[in-house]
Length: 268
Image (cartoon, rainbow, N blue to C red; front, side, top):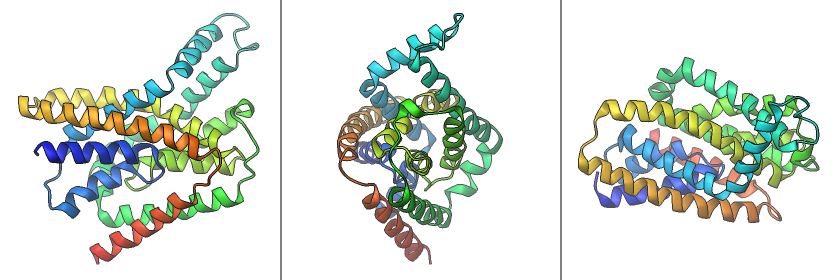
C-alpha cells in the first residue's frame, strides 16, 4: 500500500459507508478494478473507525441526549416523558441481532462472502428491495412513533449487512421505509444505529489489530485512511440528510442494480 491507495480507499469508505450502496463491496471491488493488492483487514479497521468518528461528530447532540435519557431510565419511573431514553433502549435492542450474527458467522462472512458473485447478487437484490420500499412505503411516520417491534424488525434486517454488497445503511433504511417511516427518519435511525454497531465492531477489530502488530508505515497509512474516511463520511451524512428531505432513494437503488450487473459482467 502507498499514500495514493490509502487516500483513495479512505475516500471510497467515507463516501459509501452511509450511502445505501455498501462500503464493504466497494472496498473489495475498487482495489481489484485498479489492480491494487487487497488493502487488508488493518486498513479496513482504520477506515471504519474514521466513519464511526464522523457519525459521532455529526450526531454529537443526539448522542449526549440519548446518553442522558438512558441514565434517566435507570431510575424509578425513568421512561416517563423520556423519549431519548426510550430511543436509547430501542437502539440497543436493534443492535443485538447483528451482534449475535457477527459472533456466530464471522468466519464465513470474512471468507466465502467476499466472493464477487455474492456481492453482485446482494447489490441487485437489496437494490430492488430499496426501490420497492421507497416507492411503496407510506412514509408518514417519524421517530417519535418508533416501537419496540420496529426496533427489533430493523435490527433483524441489519444482520444482512454482514454480507458484503448488502449495505448496512441501505438495508436498515429499507426496513424502516417498509415500516412506514419517512425517508429522513429512516436515515436518521440508520445512522444512529451505526454508533453502537460501530463501537462493538471497533472493539473486536482493534483487538485483532494489535495482535497483527502493524509496522510504523502501516500505522501511517491507516492514519491517513482514518482521517480521509472521517472527513468524507461527515460530508456525505450532511449531504444525504439534506437530500432526503425532498428527494428519493431511487437513484441509489438504480446504482446498486447497475453495479451488480457490472460485477457479473466482470466475473463471467
